[in-house]
Image (cartoon, rainbow, N blue to C red; front, side):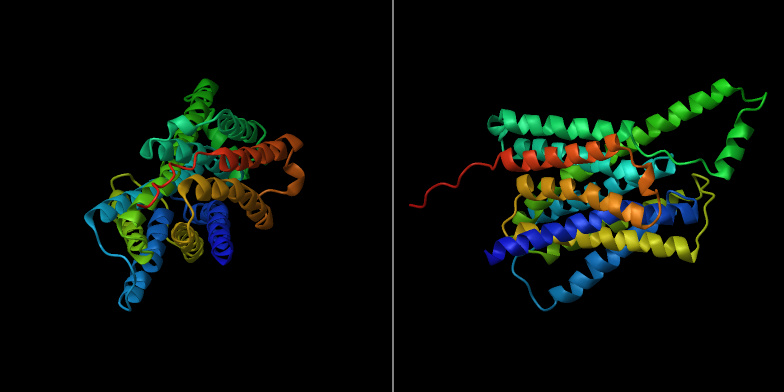
Length: 341
């Protein structure tokens, strides 16, 4: 029973941290006016929390061992997490709002998670009608969230920019095309985050199993992947991509905070697996609770007033949560272990 409560606490830690991740990261991106600079800060926070600290703790010893299989799978899990973070940043950069970007990501990620877990464990025969109904609920809820997302008044700067776009040299038709292009960019970015984070749980679980149940070693690999993808690559691309943002203390603070939340969420996932959780059960619960926490965090930070939330939007959130819970309840559990001889 104590192990069960520990696993639920670890799942709660991950859901809380990842639910707050989007709104906090949004503040960092807005302050630095750049999609790459906040990503660098996220990678730095991951490096400190997921590499430096675990390496110091590992000096005292821990069960498990470094293995090539565990190393590869854990590095891939870190890469999936970093690409998911990049997808979120790009979605926000192209005009997406965290109040609906994150629910969509967390609505689709459990579907990817469950399907990938079934592929990796050859469990497609266990996908029963109630489980498929849960997947349908998740997709329906995500679409509802997108259609009835809160509408906020455009900022004066945005209005000025729009008036500049609709000039005789650049007719209104071009403005419509730009909006369509940005919408496609937002959706593709959301898809990148959805697929990446949906793959995160099964891949990380296999990496931890490959390291014989170690908690610190997979976390270190995740931090290394984040450092390579979220720090070195963006720094190298700042000049070639003509990034016009700026470093400032407020943006750095919010972005480092987002990275810290992401790293603590990764730790929570590893702890949940250590305490007996499986991707089939851990990740749908996380992805079901995180959108609710995301919305509450956004409202608490005055991102969107509560009066702007339509009943249909709230219904979409509820449908996503119910769908995730159904996936959790009726998801395949894998094959039973062979009886001991």
